[in-house]
Amino acid sequence: SAVISQKPSRDICQRGTSLTIQCQVDSQVTMMFWYRQQPGQSLTLIATANQGSEATYESGFVIDKFPISRPNLTFSTLTVSNMSPEDSSIYLCSVPGRGRETQYFGPGTRLLVL
Amino acid sequence: DQQVKQNSPSLSVQEGRISILNCDYTNSMFDYFLWYKKYPAEGPTFLISISSIKDKNEDGRFTVFLNKSAKHLSLHIVPSQPGDSAVYFCAASALNSGYALNFGKGTSLLVTP
Image 1 (cartoon, rainbow over the protein chains, first blue to last red):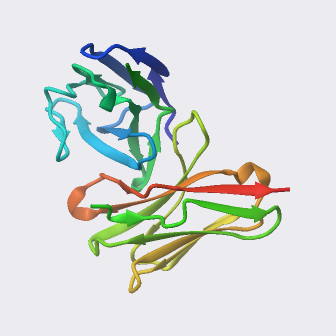
Image 2: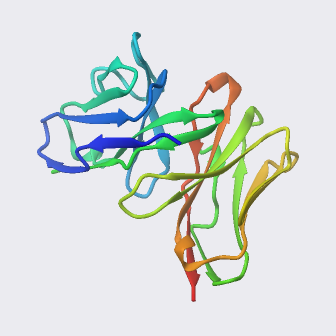
């Protein structure tokens, strides 16, 4: 299985500011994914980050709000821009394991926007 | 539109007994189903998965059963242990959506001594 780390583990931010979340994987992977879990809700895919190409965003998520970087095969960042209290969530990155049979998640970044 | 549903928000089971966690789905294009366990303040931990070409997959104490005609799957944990107390998420993916996972809202399992 992949070992995934995220920074920061948690943060409290003021509305209108931006936060960049880092995701580091211990092996090279073509695809990395960013999910969000709002309070009391299920995990929702934000976007897929492929190295060397633009991220692919799911319906309801846009690049201006959640810009993503993927500079190499082991690292990605997600920025939450111009934050509002509705952005308070757990943000998680994940990578596929054996094809579509498995997918491994990082520990998450707990964000509270005041 | 919730395509993966876990209708029981919580479940309490005695240690040593069987825990059965249920999951229903609506999208007939789903062909992989995954179960995750999540402790507070941690990310989801992959447990077991099943392909739609199978009806059962077993790994140690964990067995997942898939009933495609009913669009229903279940995770059995036997025997249940107090360390199994966590939130369990069911997730599904469809070939035409690549690796994107659709998650249920989770079932909180409490295993009592």
